[in-house]
Length: 69
Image (cartoon, one colour):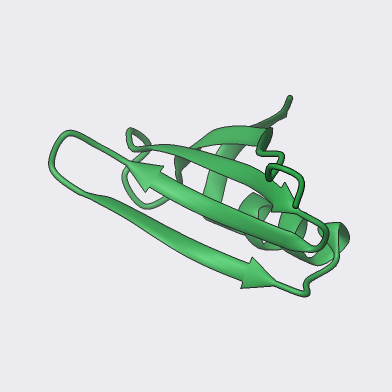
């Protein structure tokens, strides 16, 4: 079995507080994670069998000033 490739796709700041960094990770074919990470809390949402176009729209709606990597 090949090792899983993990790639950073996009970053941004949460549109809820404008501070919390958020990341969109590609973890394999049609598997993505949206991660919010702050000193106080972190959370991860996993999207399996989901096309890139759908996940990028979800991420874009969660952040301000999205930057593709």
